[in-house]
Amino acid sequence: MLTLTGAPSTVVYTLLLRQVEGGENTLQVDDAPEHHATTELTGVEHTYTSLEKDGPPDIIFISSDGTPLYAHRAQLCVVSNNNFDLLLTPSIIDLPSTIELTEDVHTLSVILHVIYGASFDPYTPTLGALSDAINAFDKYGLAPCSRVSPGTPVFEEVTKSISRHPLETYTIAAEHDLFDIAQKASEHLLTFPLSTISDDVVLRLGSIYLHRLFTLQLARTYVLQNLIIRPPDKHDANTQCGRQESESMKLAWIAAASPLVLAAHPDVSTETIQNKFECVKTSLHCAECRHCVERRVDEVLWKWSITPRTICRDTRELYVALSPLDRTRGTMISHL
Image (cartoon, rainbow, N blue to C red):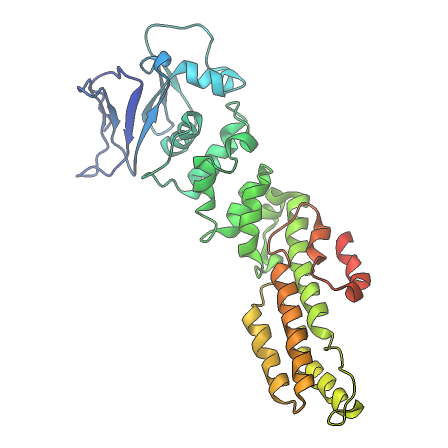
């Protein structure tokens, strides 16, 4: 049951969402000394603060699940470029007006957080609520690219979901061209089997962001294969190590590299590469040969470490780790 016990009379109010004992939901708006309007529902707590000139909240939104949410008409009109889906008139009225909206309370709560630039702490909206809110931005005259930019509270909230839901987060970002979020999410999709993506998700991703994800995986795999397949340079022949012994170093390297080339994937760790070639070094009797192997391994590890682990706006950045000798073959990546 929802109970309204007063009216808000301040620019500061608290949206308190928590499970009420007995399973009932209660909305309480009281003229307390602190002039806080408190909503009890399910989940969280937050305080919105508007400018003093806005005065007390003068509009009430009723969510699709029947929850009232208070806001300031002036603040909404400043932030929205279409008067909040043409629901607000520029004229100022003394009494609060009530407008029913199609979004649920969680989605509207996120939208209001964004409009007021408020932190979500300790409120933790679900990724679904964040997605629904961002989907509604255009409807209410809010530009996703500017409202969900690095440093904004909603940007931080969306990125919190990356580790648990990387593909869905990447998809939400792709739908609205939120490149910075998509870039962060892409690092968690290095080994994701792209062939398992459903047709619906493919349509939501669009060709550009799907292409960037495919290119990231293919390019990193290709870069790794090209890096590890080239054996170390031979040192000058000496009395202890001639041409035959140097050839043994090359064969040992190829023997160690071949399984790694066949099993290469975009997220191979530097530790795996180092361990794979450690046996090559220990199998050699010549100190100069071992030094050549060490130098080549260090070169591979360094180039692999600087190979981008996230999508790039320009796919040519993805083969930066290729050596000059490999670049001729590597140019194919720039056309992916």
